[in-house]
Image (cartoon, rainbow, N blue to C red; front, side, top):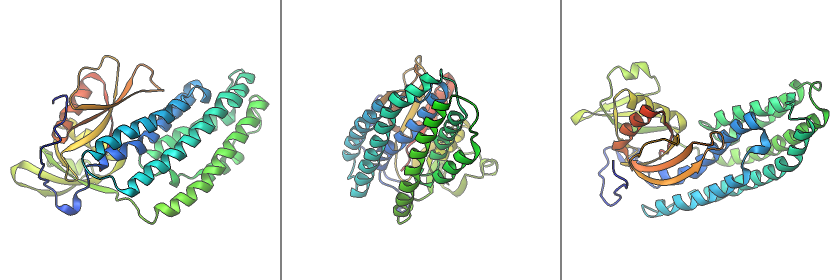
Length: 327
């Protein structure tokens, strides 16, 4: 694996045209997933250090700077559709407003009530942080607007006891949670109605080599479609975070990935400790991890045929394949 990926060579896809997707999608998918990663980091920081400790404003900057990087690389390989551009800027503005409001609030009023309470955790804090954990897990496989914000808000007021903890902190947390989830409940309904007009495909096809014949029986999420000459196998799997987990399992089982949705290049993010060795592919993105200060998130573009070897290399020193940005 070299330091750069050769984008000039013409690749002849194996998969039929109806199962191919534009290569630009691997780039423009990342900014949307960056928001998911931010919520994962937020849940971890809130649980361990409190809401005021999270870097809200640098998260906004990271979204827009990363969006510039990814759209530049995507544009060099094809046209980004108007719908994709509109989606990226719409969610970017929405995310920025949420982070700015939440950051301003938690760094002032939230910080003050936390100090007044002596950093003691109230039942309201416990509920809100458990919901943050739940929301972060939910986002890795399901669009944010499908989250039951209204149900969580109702549970908050019916299940969280009024006794226990500092009264000032309790009242402030009730107000902030109600405002946040009340607004999200209404906003998500509108977005869900629009998204339902053009639902995203939930399955994707890949070409493998060396897939064990018994693996389909062991992993029901992998559907064997066809065996080709030269030891190649076409499989169909779920998309999103589950797809990353599937590819990781297959690679560690000794299989190699040849093609994904008609493409031979892929963008991935890795979570790396400070002593990580040199890795292949072209480095496009690097960022700190709020939940793990000494680690870094690094986004690399690489040939798909090198992905399985990278997964096995990561496993050898404790690095993590965070996400494969499929098309």
